[in-house]
Length: 75
Image (cartoon, rainbow, N blue to C red; front, side, top):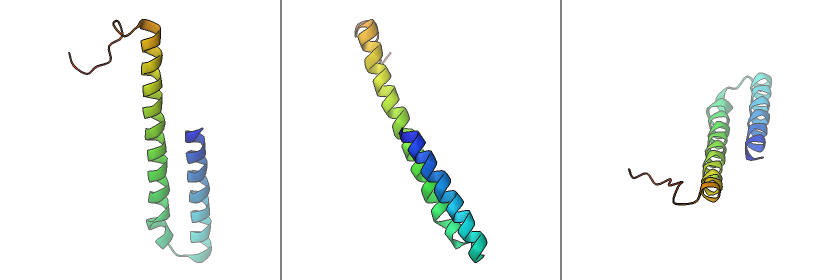
């Protein structure tokens, strides 16, 4: 759901920016709006993958037990 919302906002703001640039012949909004929206999309994507990673760790611990599934970084 996070990725869908972030992607939808990105597409809408990008389309709105392109339309307004075309109507006003002013490219200055591109310098601010487009990077801001894609940064928001990147943060949303990073949060989603971090959340999925944590959920998968919990699922694997329940499935295999903590002594078999050891996700520590130490070797």
